[in-house]
Every structure is written in C-alpha cells, then in structure tokens.
Image (cartoon, rainbow, N blue to C red; front, side, top):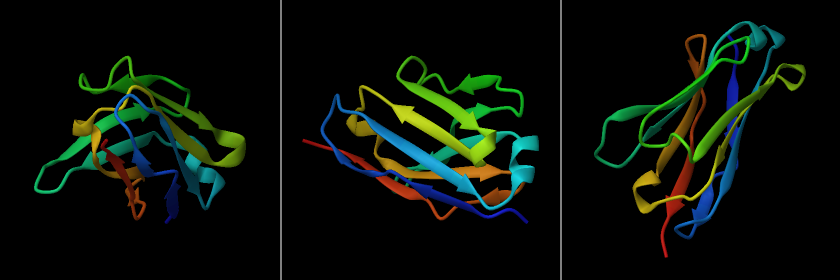
Length: 111
C-alpha cells in the first residue's frame, strides 16, 4: 500500500498562508484521487479538498476561494495552498489516497 507523508503545517496568524505537501511512496499514486481532510480537537473529520487523477478539483464550502489543491504526478505529490487562514481552520490536516492516510500535520491559526 502506498505511504503518504505530509509536511508544511505550522503556526500562522489570521489572514496568513501556508502550503501543505503530501509525498507518496509510489508512482501508482498518480492513478488515484488525492484528498485533504482535517480534524479539529473534538470535531468530526472534514473533507477539505480533492483532486482526481486527471486534475478535477472539488472543495468544501468553508474553504472554497481560499484554498487550492494541486498535484504533481511526476513527483508523486499533492499540495494544498491555504490563503486567508482563519482561526476555525485550525486542525490536523491529513492526506488521503487509495485507502492510505498520512500521519497528519498540525495547522494552527492564532494571533
């Protein structure tokens, strides 16, 4: 099974930006949809964005217009550019693809 490793999380002030990266261990990653989920403390897991193998994207209503998902199949990677971050975006962000999930990366939005 493919392994996924996220990076790029951190602490940012409201209105700031972060770019998350997810690197897959296998080139078969390019055949599957890549997704970013998030889970806040005490909250439900939420699907944030998805990108299909051919680049079709979908977003949750709460991030549409602020977040952008992209992929680079040559690098077996998917990215999440997050702009105009809000405190309610604070969560652990997970990369998911083909039944595999990464360990997560913490995003904290706070002044």
